[in-house]
Length: 78
Image: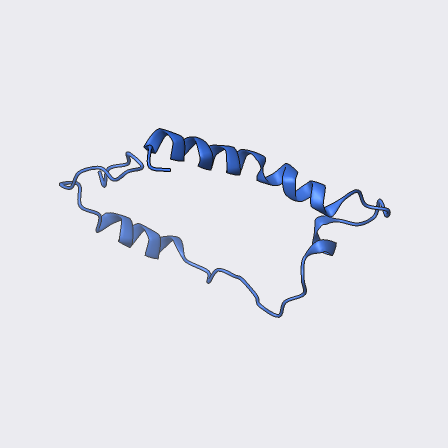
């Protein structure tokens, strides 16, 4: 597949249908008290954010250049 439009359509189809395809493989739950967490493997990994004070954020924001072009999100430094 080399056509960019066909590639985009294939990706769109995949991501638009992956949820229902995976749900079909899991099947219905026999126990109404089960949650999605019951299907996840156990892990000892922990994800967390370090606390950040508002003064540090403000200092970083004030360092942003208002002379540069906007990023992809359309937000300028100004």
